[in-house]
Length: 111
Image (cartoon, one colour):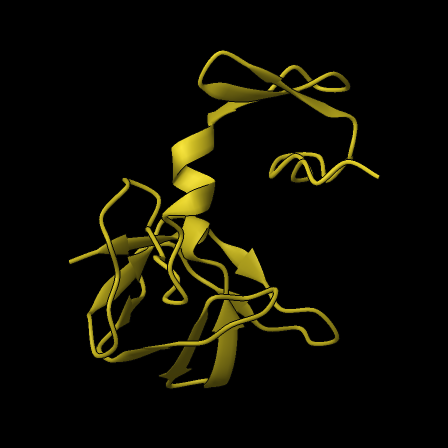
């Protein structure tokens, strides 16, 4: 069986090498072969603008977010003073006035 990596965008395993890149036949995404080989254990989390986030950073919400299972809406522009990076589906744990939340980094902007 082939040892080619699955596509990081769609997750399909229908990939092939092309010069110095891997290409996904399903979605057309291309990524460099070297990035897979040089990948380290530490995950890099970036905000909506592409800035690298770290534990303890202050961030601002870039859009209104409805909290599932609740009537709470986190408003755009709400500032979070200290974040904690975690693994899994949601990259950021934070504490706000309305409670503790797990947020995706794509909805945050570093201050």
